[in-house]
Length: 166
Image 1 (cartoon, rainbow, N blue to C red):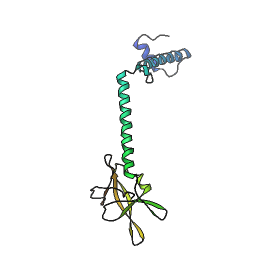
Image 2: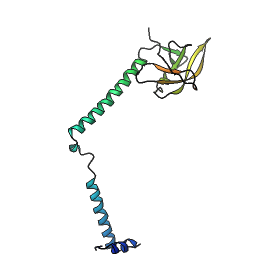
Image 3: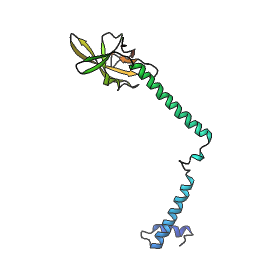
Image 4: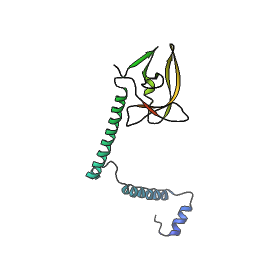
């Protein structure tokens, strides 16, 4: 079965039911179009087609990503390594230096810190009891300090470090 003229193709496409040989013809046409499209799309996983420049670019990107992750881990280690831990009841805290009050941050809250500012609860002691206050807290990639804003509405971040173990 061959459709040569535009009129024959138009009539054929207007039909609602097809004979078995017409169905076979349609399937063959669709399959041939699919095969042509498949040949046009290059094989993604064919590593032989990458040039040495492409390989070097990929390796450079991977190395940059590795170095960036290493830098984050080093700064995180400097931020928390060899810091004095305080224990109140069953919870453990780190103490901030040079704040207007002795504020403490819970160890589990340190995992939540990121470059995106977020509201965290800091604790302080008064006559044997622990009280809490909410602050806007964030970290920066370039610094081992933790940046805290006293006011959530009027944001002004100031960097504080944690107390060292003596």
